Image 1 (spheres, rainbow, N blue to C red):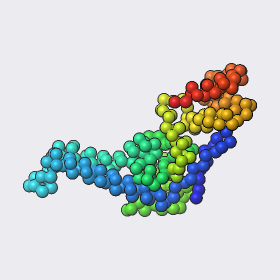
Image 2: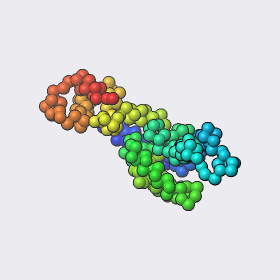
Image 3: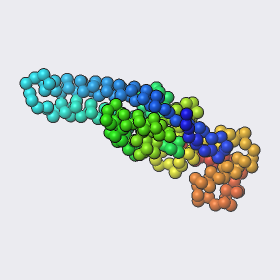
Length: 241
């Protein structure tokens, strides 16, 4: 099984295993049933409330505006927006992906942004051709990292979501679009602070100064060199969301 590695300056890299066709298909089948049931439930309730069943069983030949707005359009929105909305809210997962133990990440191991998730889902139109996702399944089986065309376009991967990766992604969840720190920098700071007592003074101080120089470019080399171990640790903690 192939994998990607998130590099760590503390010497402990995190390995993420690539999800194969089986786990991807399992997640998709679960999600397909969930979104279909949700869309149908909304359609039925909306149709009853708007009196839309008269269009199907009555003598009317036109759909009323209330039926379209209350039942048809929301049901279609639930069905087609299920994946991009939940993948954004659940940080690369859906209920099906969670049950299958997989998650979407970028090729650098970070959590994907809204643009990447939207692009990935737009390409479902191609991956689903000609039927039963044959194009997508074929690309998953024959590409190096088991990706479909949507993943190739968005630069994303599906990885096994185990306890180690969950810890990493939980840290990443603290990053916001307003943060000056990348998710990788946040993860590195967390890891350094966790291993702080285990590292000798010169090693942890050098690593801390390297991180601070990266995330706080306004700090001069002289200012960094003058910071004590306690000051370095305090400054790193203050950077975290």
